[in-house]
Image (cartoon, rainbow, N blue to C red; front, top):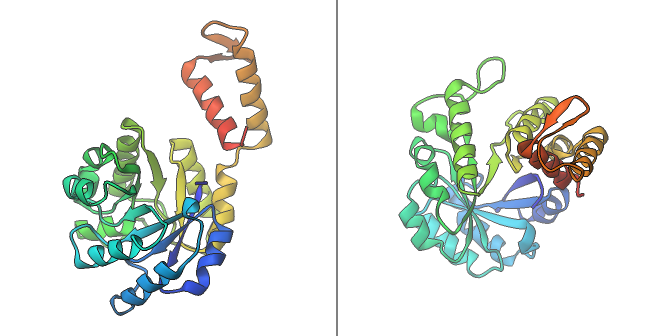
Length: 265
């Protein structure tokens, strides 16, 4: 899946195809985006949908809830096998219930973030994502961002903790959504930080955000050319070498390869 993941409420089936067309992957949402009275209809919509399973995941309600059991029963009637699990906290329960799925564990409570490393070690978990506003609510706070729009310290700590846990156990990491839909410039700045930090993707809540995320994740022509030149020059050296005034070693070569990967090279 590419870097721009787009949430789509499962009670809005007229949006499914458009969302899948606009983004690199679509997240059909059975949780927060759907009112309790509409959840059964959303599950029926999910069962009737015909999106590509390779680029579709389903966000289900928290493990252990009645809604989760209903969600899982609906998903089993579809070809979709990638689940985003809301408010993931209990590694043991997740491992038992989701062994035959590919899981994106959404860590959006204090307990979930504290247990990030434990959850990342589950064999069914392919990636971790963190959620800012539910996290703040679980702490008794009322906003993840300060007046200037940047994250508060506790949110930054959670973001880093989830990223580190994912990286420590070879799993992908997905950055949280950017709530200010109109501020695409701010989104792109945050997405550039995400890719520079090691997040594999960023979630979007509106189709208009997709282009900004893709732009942030796409290396510039100069970055691609530099990375290609570094890799080519490395073939002439057995270890650390000087390249255009910079000492190049293993980590910098890995970064260059990752730049080429993002560029499709």
